[in-house]
Length: 177
Image 1 (tube, one colour):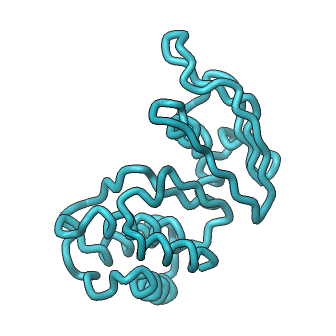
Image 2 (cartoon, rainbow, N blue to C red):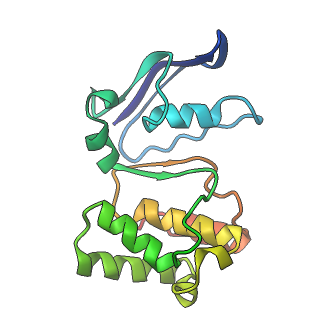
């Protein structure tokens, strides 16, 4: 399903990522561990097509993602490390915007948003502005946005950052949604 071949990213001849190679099949999980500055986020950005590798390639279903980036992104659920959201929108409004941008049908999108808001204990806060949310609440909104269109591939860049113990347990136990 997802394959990285000799992914390398250099900045002015200084390697940030060097020769990362792996292959994942449907249902498999890969975690990338390392200290700050070791290239984890750079690797993730190359995997989702936000950053062009200096060398190497990313394949999804055997095809180079750069050949059809919009098509690849339709199959992708991505949670960035930092929850940068529109602070003037409510959590519900943000998720409705995401659904609209992804072309999700209205009624089914509305039901899915409500179910995820309930699952992630945000339903009571659905009309509050994102500016009033804690970091963990903002992170949960990003998790919902990544999951709500039933992506074939999920890529998280430190998705549990900012989540408390209860949130982490809920995310682990309900990851099949």
